[in-house]
Length: 210
Image (cartoon, rainbow, N blue to C red; front, side, top):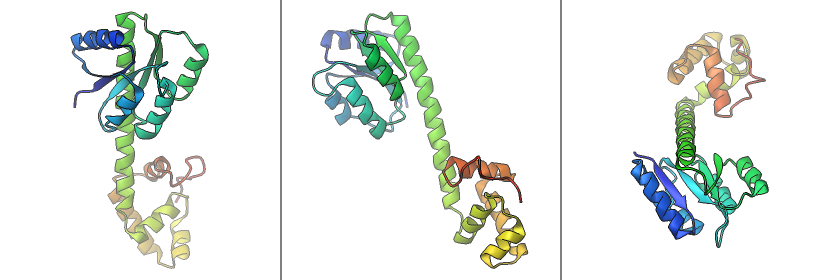
């Protein structure tokens, strides 16, 4: 799916000029005269980035950005403003804005900012997809395999797991093998990494022993 550059600005002349510029560069563009209009038509799963005016009637750019953090956290924001507000710039960056540009910036500067934002989107989406895949793998473990997995990633030895679960070491080994197969990993370190990624344990406290 081709990414969409969302231009959110109450200045019609600026919206139109910027949309024409980006379209001329082969980009897919959507324009909105307010943050509310943008949020009403937002598709969280659609790739792209947002060119967001800082000062607008109704909700400000910073308010829209905070809503985006809830609705579409993967969508990068590039702030555009005619006022060089340093305090607002700092707040926007802290909230996750990719760039903060004045409206007088050159076309090349704007295109570079969009390129960086789209690269950031792809990285975040790849990480999100990887996390979902890992969560699905762990969810596919049987109840007993899940119990063994929880103890394995905490560095418990086979005999310790057997004692804790009231099963034989041989059975523990079978379950460990099945866990590794289902997770598609070859080492315990990889299994621990998956557990840390999905929040089952802390990478610093997990021990790849056993």
